[in-house]
Length: 310
Image 1: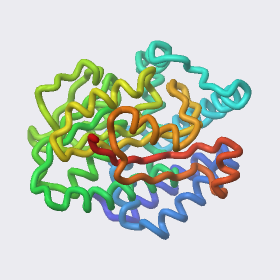
Image 2: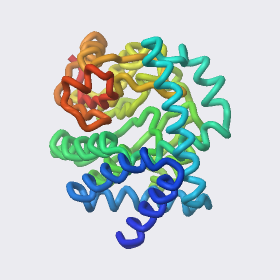
Image 3: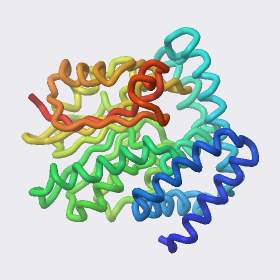
Image 4: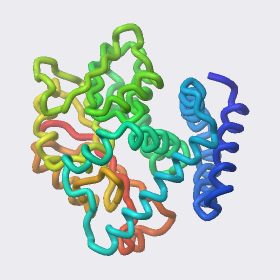
């Protein structure tokens, strides 16, 4: 990874491109980055380096990345208007999400590029990573090796953190229905010899012959018609003493979000109803305001839960 000054220059150039076309939104990004630079300077630099290396390797300019990001922001604003008007997501089920998003390479390309950038520009996303990193050090401090399953990896940042913190891990199996997501994750975290394996499958079709010490489910449940079904499925894939990590946003209208969680309590209740027990949890709102106002105005709340079988 190149030195930190080059990483920061990359991010500053990207933000400048965004500012040229959306000054209002760039103010929020700058505020987020300032906070992260002050509180997590080394970790921010590290993840910026991953993002920068990916875009350099695939030959995308900062202007193209900024355009992709702003296209996603425009989509989110449109979906947000619908959400606040009707109190539901416009994308009604997984079939529609597949038809209009996952099956269209051009849509998936800009969408995934934009989401990758958001990992280092949205404070609530970054805070989740930092909480995750801190907790797994404690949860798995007595494990010399781990078998990990990462469902719907996005860009693989959670698996990257596990790989970094537990270099003696046994395997990481990564499962997604999206070829684009798998390809991006592969470019970002690689295969580590043959220890990281990629499977293009629906998780419901994924075999149960192997058990795992740790299962990662980062921002997946909101994309599903039946989120309880996947939790029931994954609970059967845990080794005794195994842990599942779940992140889910509430009130988060997007092109491919299907299942609406309105509160953190709904998510915790779903975990319990699925035969799991919450052992640690956190949540971070997407906007700077107190919890009362955030709930009143239906601000996205990114919830993270570590859970085990009851």
